[in-house]
Length: 260
Ligand code: SF4
Ligand code: SF4
Image 1 (cartoon, rainbow, N blue to C red):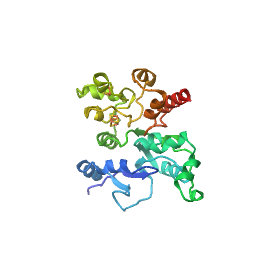
Image 2 (cartoon, rainbow, N blue to C red):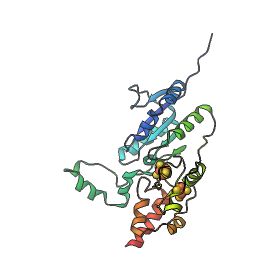
Image 3 (cartoon, helix red, strand yellow):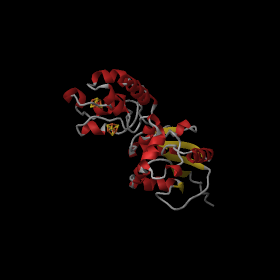
Image 4 (tube, rainbow, N blue to C red):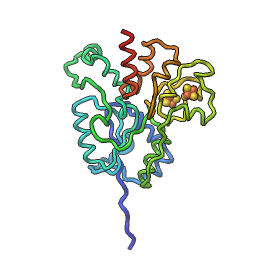
């Protein structure tokens, strides 16, 4: 009699985010069907109404932690997950909503909401790894679907994911794109930004604005010496989707102090 092997279970959970990362997974289309054939989708509300209790073999988490309830729910998800992967800038670096970490969040709620007393929020937006152990982090706003597929398929095959940690500049050189900074003086964060997008922006003749967050060994001080920008603009370019990522946070905070 033939024996059936149980498929690994896959769960996808969302915290504070725009859902763009889950949409990247849905955008995989043909590949998603192949993945769906290899796993039991236990929880993925954008793809299926079927919801199963844990434990889960592979859990993908998008979004940042912005409420006490988020933090508690995340701990429960971690307990139920063998492998937990964060997907995207919100989950790996707090996202654009981490701009609150440099401001007065109570002032924001007073300005934005008619009845701020109803708002229950933390003063910060923080990465998933600030709260629970994370097995793998996928960067980008949004993530690149090829990298996502590589990580999920490598886990299913039982091998290590082949994901590069060098800078966008290396990808730029590999595809033969003319450097926008050298040729036209366009500010570009490619030298300090994590690879993964295939150097998309320079290929369209514009500078990188760092949506994949810092690369493994960034040297923003060196890059800044080549950028013809004042302290205020330097703060601004490092404070976008990955403002709370350690390397970007340190450099923006240093230039904010100089600007005072
Ligand atoms: S365009 Fe930007 S990413 Fe490409 S080589 Fe120049 S500095 Fe690096
Ligand atoms: S070039 Fe930079 S800003 Fe553009 S997609 Fe890649 S990492 Fe993001």
